[in-house]
Image (tube, rainbow, N blue to C red; front, side):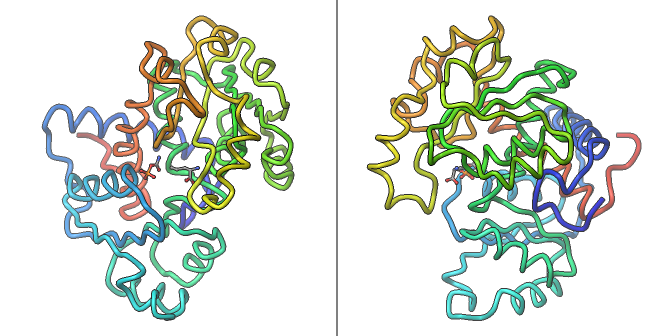
Length: 309
Ligand code: CP
Ligand code: NVA
């Protein structure tokens, strides 16, 4: 296992399988009320340049469940906000905490942080990637489908950070990813090339119905990601035909699941009816952030879980 988790392809398919298995075990332990304090006395620093509900709460509760402690660090309240360099902050924090989770505007900030940190660094979302989300989503699909190899996931909408992590994940799961996005909002060629070089099955189309046809999973995300607020009007115009609604869902396979990383803007990328409908698994995805990240933390900080409960 690499020191850091900056991208879903920082782990290989065997590590992914084992983290998902650990996450399922941690979920069972928690629901049974059984202690699982595998990170007693350990600390996680959490730096958030951007807003968060799920990532912040799931990492903090996760560390508490594991017998450790998490610190919420707002760059504006740190010397980082007054110009202290990322590389200096990284080296200092590594003297206090056992791992750092960082959500940053620029992926380069997280890479620099990881380069200088002697403790594991976890990407809690950047402009380029959101690997923790996709880790939890893979757990969610594994719970529902078991084997993922033959599944087809249709990404509908903005080819953003979450979409990029899905594209890369195909190299690990073998899932087919078909992205439907309008010109100008398609995922970057470098990401697709990197994923394909690792064996991913990925294609990009402009027609949502083509992507959705016989898909096992329909996935979407907000049209205006954090950092893109200035482009709101043009994004809403460009993406207006990329809503997951019941008509699009009817194109997918009968037992298809609908996923969204949240937060959602009902009436834009997804209708209220679909989000609240029986095929939606959005709340399971949100819950599984907790279990999947706990498994990841135990792996990165303690080298893995003890063999038996
Ligand atoms: N999905 C997700 O990362 O949510 P938050 O922005 O609330 O952390
Ligand atoms: N693409 C979204 C994901 C939020 C969890 C964003 O970056 O804002």
